[in-house]
Length: 193
Image (tube, rainbow, N blue to C red; front, top):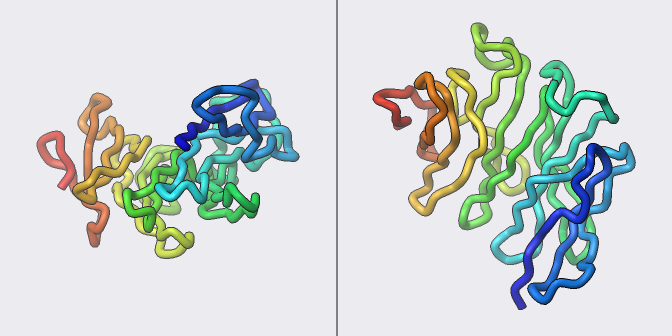
């Protein structure tokens, strides 16, 4: 039977994820509110329905929901097996990892990082956002964007390209890059190679 995910509670703090049948009802909690009373969000369910990948705020509560200190790990991407509840941390780093997006075959995960600039690109702006991929087991981390502009909200396409929002051309636009690119791409004429 088809099912869908929804947030049961989206408050300033302490959200959880629930799964609902198409007929509605109360649903069941599949990701509890974290012990630090922060949020879980950005759910992505694997094609086989076995796992849910999500972003979790791993630092404690703060008055600001906007500011992210790129010198500390603020967000992590986790994978939860829906049937057993077993949780694995897939990606975490300085600034944080957000916006998980599964490849169509489920073997790769694209995501956005907010990093300390000197960790990747010496002249990047503070809190630089870039798109990365990682294998399904959390290994083989590979950066797809090059620190130019703000790059976020990755999404996979059938042609093995990762599409994302970037302001690298001066305005926010949709860009793409081949997911199997050996090096980070260079932008030209409003399109990534």
